[in-house]
Amino acid sequence: MKIVDAKVVVTSPGRNFVTLQLTTDEGITGLGDATLNGRELSVVSYLRDHVVPLLLGTDPHRIEDTWQSLYRGAYWRRGPVTMAAIAAVDVALWDIKAKVAGLPLYQLLGGASRDRVRTYGHANGTSIPELFDSVRALLEQGYQSIRIQTGVPGLKAVYGVHAPGAHAANPTRLDQRVLPAVEDWDTGAYLRHIPSVFEAVRNEFGPDLPLLHDAHHRLTPIQAARLGKSLEPYDLFWLEDCTPAENQDGLRLVREHTTTPLAIGEVFNTVFDYQTLVGEQLIDYVRSAVTHFGGVSPLRKLFDYAAQHQIKSAIHGPEDISPVGMAAAIHLDLAIHNFGIQEYSGHTDLTNEVFRHAYTFSDGHLHPGEAPGIGVELDAELAAAHPYQQAYLPTNRLQDGTVHDW
Ligand code: KDG
Ligand code: MG
Image 1 (cartoon, rainbow, N blue to C red):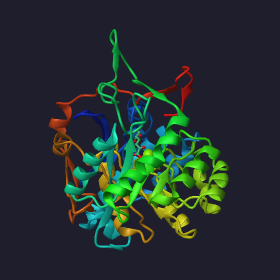
Image 2: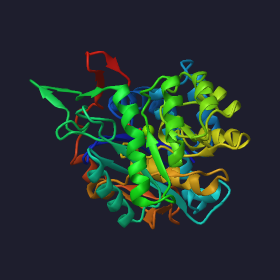
Image 3: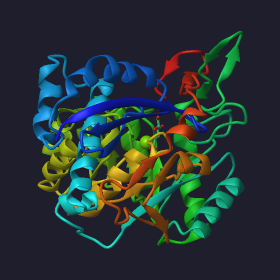
Image 4: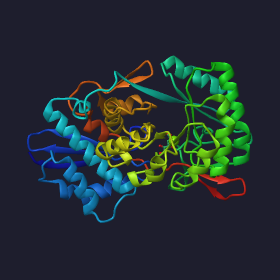
């Protein structure tokens, strides 16, 4: 079997998605997600200009060999653009292999280790009453674990809670340019406010509901240690990205001071980013996405490494992972032993029409479905009717104007 065609499809049914579609000489197609939020076209070029010419004529069954040749052969290793491009190839090849076998991908990964995949959803509110309404809406949708993000008094916009007009999907327009929205930040105000939010949520929803929180890389290790400690009475499922993740050594200090479980890694793209964190058991959950970590093949290896240190999976699953990336994640979630939880925000109806998928959500859980492959079909016409729209993630500044981590 040979790869005879490789298309890179960019579509924006509400937000941008980049998809690689490989076709074999036997007419079998495979899809892979290469979406890198806010930097989408860099991955499109990497794939179209540098990877597609290497793939044409090769055997789609040689997944590991293709992965190694794209990773090692480029000489320039790692980084989000490279690893998103390689991820799309890896997932598209797994999709083809599983379709040839006539099996859903999870069967090729060892079969199901559980009946269904537990998820968490996002509750956001500028105020406590608004946050409670958001939690109630998620509970009605069936979610059984909930991430809590709130506004902070004195700040106009906080990660996960956007003031009207400040959302990433509605960036500020200046002349003809599209510019990122600029949000404001005050670490002291945040640290003083967040424990009272969790106290209020526990008082309202009781002790049993698993609660998560994402600090989005905004704290120093000592600030993160203080936050983890102050949240201990509220028994969090995890505190996520409490400090900029590339400073692996900083997590030792956080770990020494708090028993709040820690989740890290959505911006990581290789196992090397986790060496200290996993090797010294400084975290409890690894957060990388199939889409940004080079695909199913290397993420499976990371999870096996993490398992040796009693660390569980928690694949990144915001709206900017396409249904193709989400499907690949759900197959992996079902198959591995050390599954922790899957982030799941769902997609708009239009996105689900562009990417028709076999995976289903009910009762707070996902299942990948039984369709051969990853179980996603791309509607190319509908995708073409919604072309790329330039968009940026917001940026973040302290009140004196200094740029801060977003
Ligand atoms: O593109 C950036 C988003 O994926 C990120 O802000 C989402 O932190 C995130 C999360 O935990 O889902
Ligand atoms: Mg996050």
